[in-house]
Amino acid sequence: MMRIPFSYIWRSLWARRLTTTLTLGGLALVVFVFAGVLMLAQGLEATLVDTGSRDNAIVLRRSAGSELVSQIDRGSASILETQPEVAAARDGRPLLSREVLVVINLYKKTTNGMSNVSVRGVSPQAFELRPGFRIVQGKPFQFGTHEVVVGKNIADRFRGVALGAELRFGGDRWTVVGIADAGRTGFDSEIWGDADQLMQAFGRPIYSSATFRLRDANQFDAVKARLQADPRSQSLEIKREQEFYREQSQAMAKFIKILGLVVTIIFSIGAMIGAMITMYAAVANRVVEVGTMRALGFHRRSVLTAFLAESIVLAIAGGAAGIGLASLLSFARVSTLNFGSFSEIGFGFALTPGVVWSAFVFALVMGVVGGFLPAVRAARLNIVNALRAS
Image (cartoon, rainbow, N blue to C red; front, top):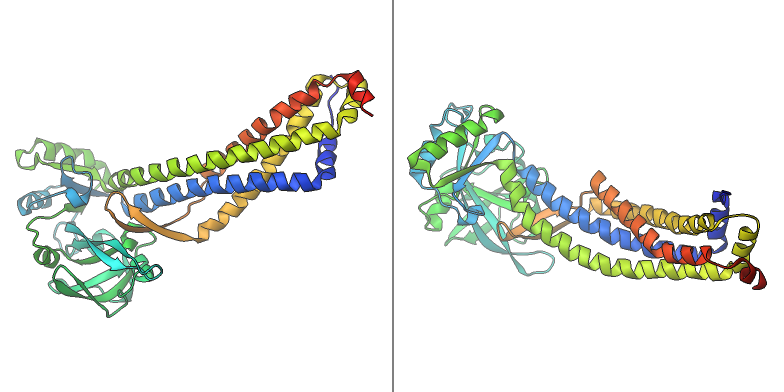
C-alpha cells in the first residue's frame, strides 16, 4: 500500500498558515487551562505532603478528621512521652510536641478582606522536631510569653503581621518577634506560639494533637499496636505525619480537579469543534488533490491516515505550546481556604511529569476526535467526482 509522505502533511499545514495558527492557539489555550488545573491540585497536595515527615507520627482523637476537632488531654500526652519508640531531643527529653490549633481572622493586604489564619501552639521541642521551620528574620518566640512567630506566607499576604507588630486575638496581645520560612510547606501559612499560653488565652484545657519523632521510622507499626492495646489510649489514633497531611489535601485537591475539569471539558468541546471545522475546510479545498492521490494509487486508508495525522500534529504542537505556557505558572503562588483546617494556605503550581503526560494525552484526544470525521470524509471521496470538481 502506497503511503503519503509526511512532507505532504507539513506542506498542507504551511499552506493554511492562518487557520493552522488559529486552531493551534485554541488547542494551546485549552491545554494550558487543563495543565494549570492539574498543577494547582498537584501543588496543593505537594505543599501539604511536604509539611509532614515520614519520621514523625501524629496522634489525634480517634475518628477526628482534622486537628481542629481533635482533643488530647494531658494524661494521654504523658502516656505518649513514655513510649520507647519516641526519639530523644538534644536535652534528653522526649522529642514530642504537644500542640493546639486555633483559627483567627486577619485582614489581607490585597483585598482588605478578612480570612482565617491558623495559629499553632507548640512545645519547646517543636523547632527540633521540624527543622525545616527556620527563623529568617527576628528571633524564635520565648516560651511562657505572648510572643509569636509568623510564617512567610502570612507575613507576605496579611496586614499587621510585620516584625515587631502586635496582634490581638484570644483576648490578649501577641508580639511578632520572628518571621519563619518553612520551605513552602503548610507551616508557612501558620502562626506559632507557646501552646500553654494559647490554651490559657482561648480557655482550652486540652491539646489538639501530639507529634513526635520516631527513633526508627520502621517502628511505627510497633508503637501503633502498643497504643491500640493500651486501655488508656483507646480514644487515640496515630498516623504517620506525612500520611495525615496527604489526607488533609485530598478533599481540596479533588474539588479543584473536578471544578477545573468541568471548565476544561467545556473549553475542549469548543477546541475540538474548531479543529473539526478547520479539517473539514481543508478537505473541501483539496477535493481535486485527494482525487488525484486516489487516482495515483493511494488507498483510502492512506488518505485517512494523512488527514488524521495533520490533526494530530496540530494537537501535539498545541499541547506543547499549552504546556510551555503552563510552565510559567510554576513561578506563581496562590492562597486558598484549606478544607482540612478552614484557614488560609499558600502554595504554588507544581509541574510534574504526570501533569505533562496527562496534558499531552488530553491534547492528542482532542486532535483525534477533532480530525477523525473530516479524515473519514476525505477518505470516502469518490475519485471520479473529486476529479470533476476541478
